[in-house]
Image (cartoon, rainbow, N blue to C red; front, side, top):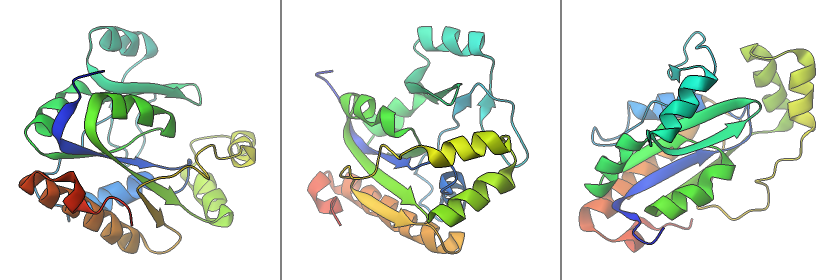
Length: 198
């Protein structure tokens, strides 16, 4: 894509299942400047307690994607995920969008937006296993399968990394700091002023 969308930022929160991405986003949402956009994802999965996304069936998802309703979409673990194309507007206006996305969607995001900042969330394997079992979305065999998979993101360069083994407020504070720096950088119109590499 030659004409990428900017000058705002897309902050992509990535990491394996069970590292606590959504919990960090929920905690950070209320601490970030009001201009920061946390879009609602579309997922082909029924919503559960405390989950905030638009639930559709696969046919509805495919139709929405064909209509261009998603800025980016991907498939993982038998489910389809999409981020609404409406986020283009705040990015064009110099705003900051923050979302939980697949690591496999990063290249598509970089093709679409001028400024993409990847924040990888990590935890110990013990913490990850406990969280996966506690959320009770999958069978014990499915959880074991997830834990057995090698994380394809490990070893890849990212802009920031947050280790999320502690209380959620600590990780959320780090994420808020990263996002707030992007807000300030967007205000002055200089990606370099955001100190992308830490």
